[in-house]
Length: 445
Image 1 (cartoon, rainbow, N blue to C red):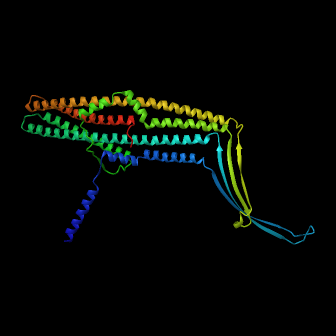
Image 2: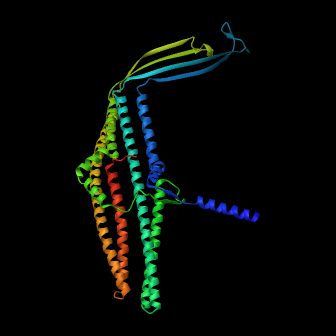
């Protein structure tokens, strides 16, 4: 009885471990969400945004008065001889100890500083907006990378299946050839030739499987997961079979390059961020020129002093007033700051212009890639139909003895290449569509 219970317990444990060892299946949406949550570039961009937002708060704080409090305690002791009629008494000594408590409260407010506060606030807002655009573009970039890697994994998985099916077909063909050789219908050379083809198919399958496994590792690392864990990627919403209607609709949607470029300039966060950085650099010029102006501030305070802390404000001083300061010459330091800020502004303007050029090139190249992908898909479909018929004819001729094994092997290789071309063309088309969306920058996450 105990042996049966032990065996049952072991079986339950093994089943539990086996169930726990099952790889986790991730859909495309799950993969994108994990990437947005765990990708280090997204986390760093979000941290930079928090820092920029604190800069905006600090810029508003410069409009508020400053407030400070102080306190101190001092103890002093005076020692010396005792004097009588101006003459010290020998051997005499006297000491006096006093204590003093001081407390104060002061406030100050800048009334005018050459518009530096206003420029600083504008720069902080522009910097925060630019950083926010960077976060959006970083998220878009990560999503596109995850989508591309995910689709690449699906593509390589399909190529593995193509290699597996090809190996199965050639193994069945080898069995038929070996059987025909045993009855004397085919020569031993055909057997060796087919065995060589099966070995080549096995090598192709090993290479395809290795590329598939490495692509999965890259995707897992991109999402920020542990590459030692086992994951599977499957999504019913992503189909490798492309409808010709979808291709036609895509071709009609992405035709006007000029309109698409304007759309990208309207929505691309990196371009909008470059413009915000230009605004920030303009405010930096104003801040640098503020040193040419005087600074006017108001101040007020309260000070108390007493030997007892409880009565420190029995004797107090209350003060208030205005303070005006103006640096008349600073050794051209302000001029240097202004010229440096102007140079930074010019560079920021160039950055905006360069970003506009880059976007135009990216849109053009994305549309060319998409058009090429659509043409490749059409050609691959025609090639598959032709290769399928060619292989069927070669197999029938070989079975009838009218064709050679070499003809069949060539036709079979052409069919496998055609299948692989269809898989590659299908996923290249899907990735090209995603790339077009990424280049336009309309989708946010």
